[in-house]
Image (cartoon, rainbow, N blue to C red; front, side, top):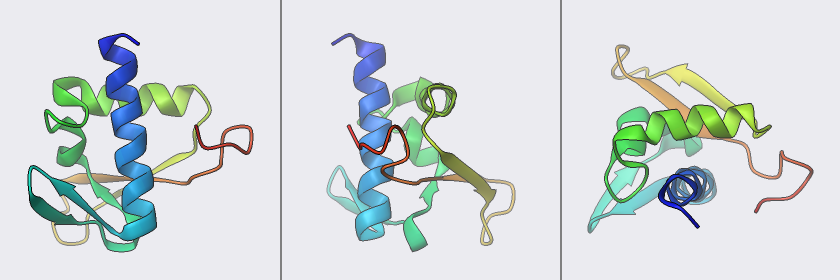
Length: 93
């Protein structure tokens, strides 16, 4: 698996975990993900998607994954992203 595919899988896994448990643990810190929404800047964390994390999210969307986006109520200038599992051919891979 190349670096690009690894980053896409990391982004996908982060969104799935956030949706299931409403938080992520990154480098020992707990990041709240209220109602499964992942703050956009989290996708660019080096352990998730790196500098291209948001681009990987867009690529996943283009591949058929249903990914919703909305503005954060607490930080309107910051976009957030959510992931709806089991939306690509009925299978979460």
